[in-house]
Image (cartoon, rainbow, N blue to C red; front, side):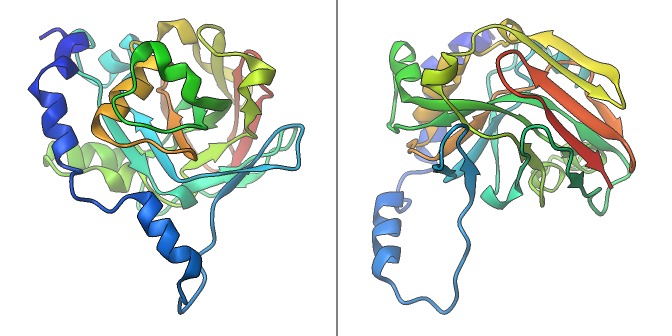
Length: 265
């Protein structure tokens, strides 16, 4: 199968059909604006670089295996696998200020905790069935982030043909830098992306090695879900993902953005 033609067939309709009938965010949020609630649930916000604004996070989407070499190291064939997406809860966000190295807690239940360095896209416009040539018009900004993964739990669930949410969607599993408005950065189509652990380079690639570009990711996602302002997309990681232990310091870089660092504790 040519994975780049996958979404042009009935598969896209099948995926989109799974969300039919769900309450729209506009309806839900409209009710909440005047609802009397028994308690308050905190929102999730990411600071905007060079501004006192904060970007409100509605959903976190992530694409899997979006660099060919990483796809192969995970046991897949990048020429045959269509794009697939998963989500993290918004409170997985751990904001990391530029120039700092905050503590990042080693999570429970795992003995194989992995880093994944990624470009993150922040949407400012939503829609359905967004054409690829219009998709970048929906981007509000960019940043960089880590898709931290309990790899042993992810693999165990995969082996059992069960959802591997427990391996991806846990507390603080999404360290992220401040959002940079697209007017400040332009769009990211190429540039170095690397990650170091304790000063040693582990991941080193170029954004132009993505299988699915940012525009294609937005378009494909909008075939399955109605996208909204506040949605962010982790756009995939290069090869050489690997484990960290307590005491390790992770530093990641994307050309044109401040580095991001955390210490595993």
